[in-house]
Length: 269
Image 1: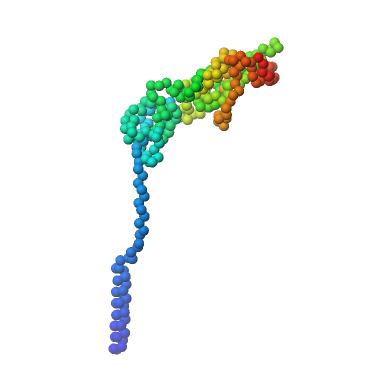
Image 2: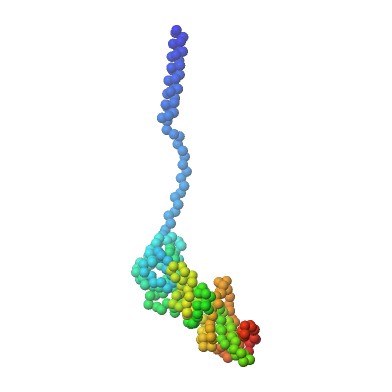
C-alpha cells in the first residue's frame, strides 16, 4: 500500500515537472533574428518640365494640351521647358501651333512649335525649298492613298503627233518628291482614316524643280503622282526633266503610246 502511494506520488512529481517545462517554453520570447540593414536608396531629384497631356497633331494650336510634370533632374535636356527657368511658359505658349506631330507624355521642345501669328506652310518648309500646288485627279493619285509626307514621282502625259497619227507621250519629270499637303490637309484626319482623295497636291521642290513643274503644267494633258516606297526616300535623285527649262534638249527616253502599241524613243531635241 505504501509502495503504490510512493509510485503515484513519483508520477505526479514527474508530470508536474513536465508541465512546468512546457509552460516555460511557451512563455519564453522567440530567439532574436539578426536583420541586416541595407543602405537606403538615394532619392531622385526632380524638376518640373512642360509636357503634352494629350496628342497634338501637326498644325494644331495649343489649347490646354500642356501641363507641368515631374521629371528626373539629371536627364533634363537643355531644350526642355522647365518651370524653374520659365514659370509662365504654360500661359505664353497657348495658341502656338505644332510644327510636327507630338504625343501625350512627351516633354515639349520649343523647336517643334510655331508662333501663333506666323504662317504655317512657310514655317514647315525647309530652307531653300519651294512649295508648289499641282492639280491632280482622284484617278491619278494612287487611288487616294497618297498622304502628306509621302514621296512620289511626277509623271507628265501629253499628246504627240507622230507620222500623222495622234499618240501620247509619258515621262517621269520629277522623282522622289515630298508631298506637303493634299488639298488643305497637312496630316491624316483625327479619326485615323488613311485615304485622302484630293484635287490639289502641294509639293516640296527645289527652285529648279519648281520651274520644271510650272512648265509641265502648261504642256501636259495630265500630271500623275506615283507613290514611292518609304524605303526609297533616302535615295538621291538627279534625273529630272530640266530640258523643259534650260533648252538643252530632252534627256533619257520617252514612252509613246500609239494605237495601243507602246514604244520608247531616245532623247531628242
